[in-house]
Picture 1 (cartoon, rainbow, N blue to C red):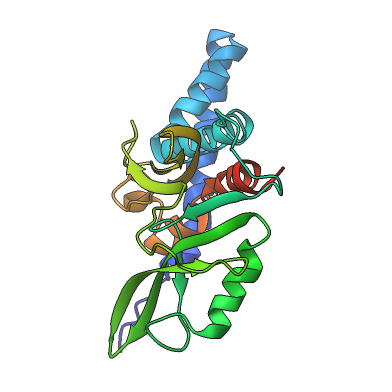
Picture 2 (tube, rainbow, N blue to C red):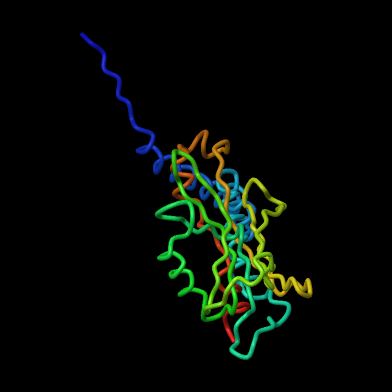
Length: 242
């Protein structure tokens, strides 16, 4: 008589395994707290036991809440010089945002008009941007200058008055989260007007829960926290708002 082997997909074991582990943590914490008659001990033990499998998730939530409630809008250091129409002179965002080209390896007239429509109301002269396109099975990157408000290129080598830079900086927990720092600089005076951040959270697959609680790479991605950034807020307040 042929033998049959029942194979249970790991996805079906994920919920029972994690519920069993959490229940075990509750039971041990409750039992010891009753024996020692300490409510505080219950919470200390519970968090400690749960941290065996989920410590990085707790840390990620703490980091995200810290940046959400404490650091979101507190990094503007100086007022941005603007003209009588409340426009900045010129701006470089090379390396910060890469504009995808649709038609060729250079900006088309349609794309130039789109960029003008986005930036003319707060920039007087020009904006320098990064572009990229995918041609011939490879990516082609370039930097381009778009003149705004009918300005003409009298000096093509003229540097932008204001510059936004982006840099990956070290963190004290690099296996849990990473950080991009943006700097808004007045190049005429070398004054840093503001800084902004983009916090992203790192996943790995070598933890206790990956080995014993059926957390595969897809589960890690599903439960990972989304990135948090204040670049859009700082950009608007420093460069656009009057």
